[in-house]
Image 1: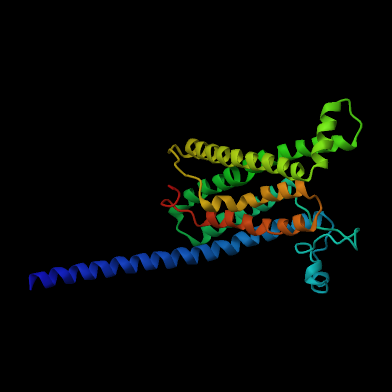
Image 2: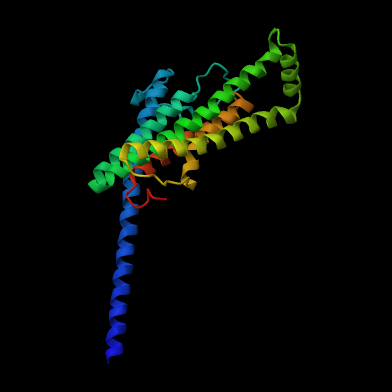
Length: 270
């Protein structure tokens, strides 16, 4: 009889723990859906500013009467219409989109989550903006700009004859033309991810007075699609393929906002 009572207690306890875990998962999923919406709104606001600055109309009537394929966010280069405007992302545009996403996620987290988790969300915002966006973007953008300058030597008059010849040789070789920028961008991105993670951890440690142990996560690589786009642009500037890939940048950067808004004191540890 006593054994049956003990078994019953264990059964009730296990059922209770299962319900708690189920409720926590349901709550986490709900929060992620909510902050995904606010992050998307932040990204949309940033895209609207970029589109307006590049000459696209934000008039709702005009947008409705325009085919979706001709909307700024979907439009790709067309050889038959070389004068058409196409939305492009410079490094500062990507920073703007990332900032909009993170601020949107932070706002959503503040509205929909517990107040005690807000400091963790602020720390995650720093990690996302520095570790996952700004620093890796800088690590890729600078070498990319320098390589473009080097590549341009083959078509310009310069005193650096050896560099000019090297540029001509690389541009004339299909294999090297792809390999060189790929190596430059790939190694720069890897260094940027590591440096960004270390800097954001140190900054959060200094701000909060607590040693940060946040490691690089799989989701941290989503915002780096913007850096991949830089590499593709470097290899195939103004190509339809590069333009199509760049359309994924806002979607990838939305993840930064979701990670910020759903951060709490537990998941910030790993």
